[in-house]
Length: 66
Image 1 (cartoon, helix red, strand yellow):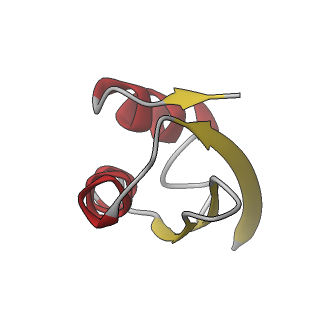
Image 2 (cartoon, helix red, strand yellow):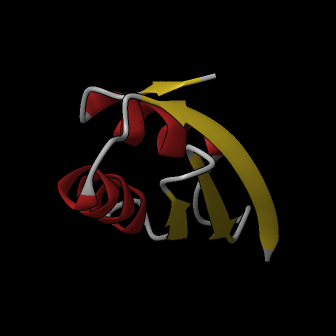
């Protein structure tokens, strides 16, 4: 498993947290959002999902991965 932590702009509430976590989980990865730090920590299997797919899933929800 690979672990990464990304800054995500635009998350402000519990709904945002759920939206990002569900988007990441929809790619086959797992996510833990820290709203205060505006970060998401992602665990994924490189043989099953690529970072670009995860980033796109988050951005499709209206958030900016920086």
